[in-house]
Image (cartoon, rainbow, N blue to C red):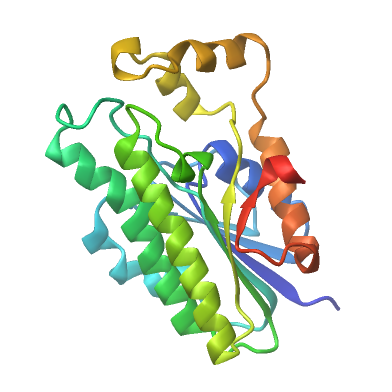
Length: 245
C-alpha cells in the first residue's frame, strides 16, 4: 500500500491553486488541503477546504492545527500560492490600507505558514518535506506601478533562501523554493490590463501578451510545479522560474 501524500495549497479556489487541486485529487494517494477566502465547486473525498482571508493575519493562528495535521505521510508540501497585485499606482498615490493588505497576503501570511510548517514537520524525517513559495519575476525588477507587489515578492525570495540555509544548517531535510510562474492567464492579468497607462508604463505590452495568446494557463504552471517536485535533484537553487524548465 502506498503512503499518503499531503499537499497544503493557499489560494486554492482559482488560478494556479485551483489548477493544482484539480490535478492532485486525481491521485487517490494524495490528500489536499486548500485555503481560500471563497469556496470551490469541488466535492472530493481527498479535498478539504478551509475558509480563511489571509489578509486577516489574526485569524491564521487559530486554524494552524487544521492546516498542518499530524499523520504518516511520504511527502508533505506547502504551496504558498495566494497573492495580490494590489493597487497599480506610483508611490505617493497608494492607500495605506492597500499597502498593508499587499504585504499581509504576499509576505506575512506565507511567513507565518512557513514558520508553522517547519515547526510541525521538521522532525518528520521519514517524509519528503517541501515549501514552494510562488514568487514573481517582478521580485528582481523595478516595474513602475508595482512597487509594493515587487517588494513583497522580493521578500519572499529572501525568506525562502534563508529558510533553505537554516534547513541545511539544522539538517532537517526540508527543501524550500521561490518559484516565479511566468505570465499566467489569471484574474491578476485582467486587473493589469484594466489599469491606466499613467500608472503603469508597460500596459500596452501586457495587453499585447493577451492578444497574442502568449500567456501560460494555470494548468500548464501547475504541471510545471509538479514536475519540479518530482525532479528536485535537478533544481539545487532556491530561486526558480518555470520558464527555465
